[in-house]
Length: 117
Image (cartoon, rainbow, N blue to C red):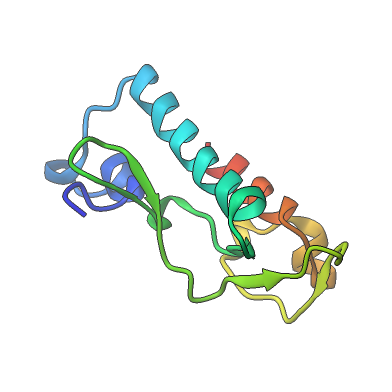
């Protein structure tokens, strides 16, 4: 992606940091939110990403975010209330119920997004 990741834009070496005002940061958050809504509700397959973090939000030339790194993603059947699974992801971004018990729902992605936002 043209502007690398949100993490690099915010916290990377000074020459790679982008001047993102409050309004632009809000737009980026809304873009990530829309991506998660698609994965959780609109996609034919319900996808739980399991590793939402600033390094996995890539920014295109217009600073529109794209969720990346689906290596840990899980597919969820519509009738399931949760998935019991081995814990994987980045600890600082994990929802407590997932990190401690392996109890995974799409709400774990929402929790991780809250850390990013």
